[in-house]
Length: 143
Image (cartoon, rainbow, N blue to C red; front, side, top):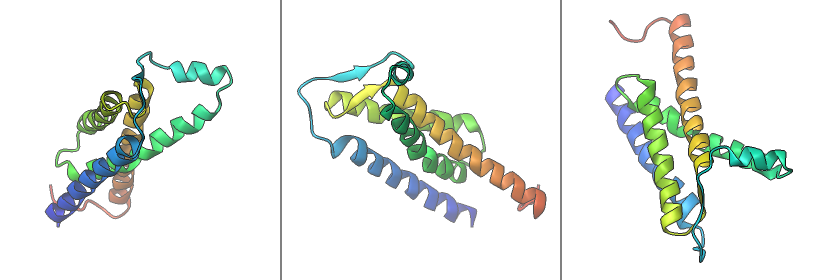
Protein backbone atom coordinates (compact mmCIF):
# COMPACT_ATOMS: atom_id res chain seq x y z
CA UNK A 1 0.00 0.00 0.00
CA UNK A 2 2.82 2.41 0.85
CA UNK A 3 4.50 1.81 -2.51
CA UNK A 4 1.25 2.54 -4.32
CA UNK A 5 0.85 5.81 -2.41
CA UNK A 6 4.46 6.76 -3.17
CA UNK A 7 3.95 6.09 -6.87
CA UNK A 8 0.78 8.17 -6.89
CA UNK A 9 2.62 10.95 -5.05
CA UNK A 10 5.48 10.74 -7.57
CA UNK A 11 2.98 11.12 -10.43
CA UNK A 12 1.44 14.03 -8.57
CA UNK A 13 4.84 15.70 -8.24
CA UNK A 14 5.54 15.26 -11.97
CA UNK A 15 2.10 16.68 -12.76
CA UNK A 16 2.70 19.59 -10.36
CA UNK A 17 6.03 20.48 -11.99
CA UNK A 18 4.57 20.29 -15.50
CA UNK A 19 1.56 22.41 -14.53
CA UNK A 20 3.73 24.88 -12.61
CA UNK A 21 6.06 25.33 -15.59
CA UNK A 22 3.10 25.82 -17.89
CA UNK A 23 1.41 28.35 -15.59
CA UNK A 24 4.52 30.36 -14.75
CA UNK A 25 6.67 30.09 -17.88
CA UNK A 26 5.22 28.61 -21.03
CA UNK A 27 1.81 30.30 -21.05
CA UNK A 28 3.40 33.75 -20.80
CA UNK A 29 4.35 35.91 -23.73
CA UNK A 30 8.05 36.54 -24.19
CA UNK A 31 9.28 40.09 -23.66
CA UNK A 32 12.16 41.92 -25.31
CA UNK A 33 14.15 42.41 -22.11
CA UNK A 34 15.45 40.18 -19.37
CA UNK A 35 13.55 40.92 -16.14
CA UNK A 36 15.26 40.01 -12.90
CA UNK A 37 15.78 41.22 -9.35
CA UNK A 38 18.20 39.32 -7.16
CA UNK A 39 18.02 41.68 -4.20
CA UNK A 40 16.43 39.77 -1.32
CA UNK A 41 13.27 41.25 0.20
CA UNK A 42 12.95 44.00 -2.44
CA UNK A 43 9.22 43.30 -2.61
CA UNK A 44 8.76 43.99 1.10
CA UNK A 45 10.30 47.41 0.59
CA UNK A 46 7.97 47.97 -2.36
CA UNK A 47 4.98 47.00 -0.20
CA UNK A 48 6.05 49.55 2.40
CA UNK A 49 6.19 52.13 -0.40
CA UNK A 50 2.58 51.50 -1.39
CA UNK A 51 2.63 48.56 -3.80
CA UNK A 52 0.08 46.56 -1.81
CA UNK A 53 -0.75 44.24 -4.73
CA UNK A 54 2.53 42.43 -3.98
CA UNK A 55 1.01 41.08 -0.75
CA UNK A 56 -1.39 39.01 -2.85
CA UNK A 57 1.53 37.83 -5.00
CA UNK A 58 3.37 36.65 -1.89
CA UNK A 59 0.37 34.69 -0.65
CA UNK A 60 -0.16 33.12 -4.07
CA UNK A 61 3.51 32.10 -4.31
CA UNK A 62 3.35 30.45 -0.90
CA UNK A 63 -0.02 28.77 -1.51
CA UNK A 64 1.02 27.53 -4.95
CA UNK A 65 3.76 25.28 -3.53
CA UNK A 66 1.87 23.86 -0.51
CA UNK A 67 0.61 20.85 -2.53
CA UNK A 68 4.18 20.04 -3.58
CA UNK A 69 5.25 19.84 0.07
CA UNK A 70 2.34 17.53 0.86
CA UNK A 71 3.20 15.25 -2.05
CA UNK A 72 6.86 15.20 -1.02
CA UNK A 73 5.89 14.11 2.50
CA UNK A 74 4.05 11.12 1.05
CA UNK A 75 6.77 10.27 -1.48
CA UNK A 76 9.88 10.50 0.68
CA UNK A 77 10.72 7.23 2.42
CA UNK A 78 12.86 8.92 5.03
CA UNK A 79 10.99 11.81 6.57
CA UNK A 80 13.82 14.33 6.42
CA UNK A 81 12.49 17.86 6.09
CA UNK A 82 15.65 19.16 4.41
CA UNK A 83 15.03 16.93 1.37
CA UNK A 84 11.67 18.63 0.83
CA UNK A 85 13.38 22.00 1.32
CA UNK A 86 16.00 21.23 -1.32
CA UNK A 87 13.47 19.82 -3.79
CA UNK A 88 11.04 22.73 -3.36
CA UNK A 89 13.86 25.24 -3.77
CA UNK A 90 15.16 23.40 -6.86
CA UNK A 91 11.75 23.42 -8.55
CA UNK A 92 11.35 27.10 -7.77
CA UNK A 93 14.83 27.87 -9.09
CA UNK A 94 14.03 25.94 -12.27
CA UNK A 95 10.95 28.10 -12.80
CA UNK A 96 12.83 31.34 -12.14
CA UNK A 97 15.79 30.44 -14.37
CA UNK A 98 13.48 29.46 -17.22
CA UNK A 99 11.60 32.74 -16.80
CA UNK A 100 14.88 34.60 -17.13
CA UNK A 101 16.33 32.60 -20.02
CA UNK A 102 13.09 32.55 -22.01
CA UNK A 103 12.26 36.18 -21.09
CA UNK A 104 8.86 35.15 -19.73
CA UNK A 105 8.24 36.77 -16.39
CA UNK A 106 10.47 38.20 -13.72
CA UNK A 107 13.24 36.13 -12.18
CA UNK A 108 13.55 37.08 -8.53
CA UNK A 109 14.92 35.78 -5.27
CA UNK A 110 11.75 36.61 -3.35
CA UNK A 111 9.69 34.17 -5.44
CA UNK A 112 12.15 31.36 -4.70
CA UNK A 113 11.92 32.18 -1.00
CA UNK A 114 8.11 32.25 -0.97
CA UNK A 115 7.74 29.10 -3.07
CA UNK A 116 10.14 27.20 -0.83
CA UNK A 117 8.27 28.43 2.24
CA UNK A 118 5.02 27.13 0.74
CA UNK A 119 6.59 23.74 0.09
CA UNK A 120 7.77 23.53 3.69
CA UNK A 121 4.33 24.57 4.99
CA UNK A 122 2.76 21.72 3.01
CA UNK A 123 5.37 19.26 4.28
CA UNK A 124 4.87 20.47 7.85
CA UNK A 125 1.08 20.24 7.59
CA UNK A 126 1.28 16.56 6.67
CA UNK A 127 3.82 15.92 9.43
CA UNK A 128 1.49 17.47 12.01
CA UNK A 129 -1.54 15.61 10.66
CA UNK A 130 0.33 12.31 10.79
CA UNK A 131 1.61 13.00 14.30
CA UNK A 132 -1.91 13.84 15.51
CA UNK A 133 -3.34 10.77 13.80
CA UNK A 134 -0.80 8.48 15.46
CA UNK A 135 -1.42 10.09 18.88
CA UNK A 136 -5.16 9.48 18.58
CA UNK A 137 -5.35 6.21 16.60
CA UNK A 138 -1.97 4.71 17.35
CA UNK A 139 1.07 3.93 15.19
CA UNK A 140 0.23 2.67 11.72
CA UNK A 141 3.32 0.53 11.28
CA UNK A 142 5.25 -1.80 13.55
CA UNK A 143 8.66 -0.65 14.66
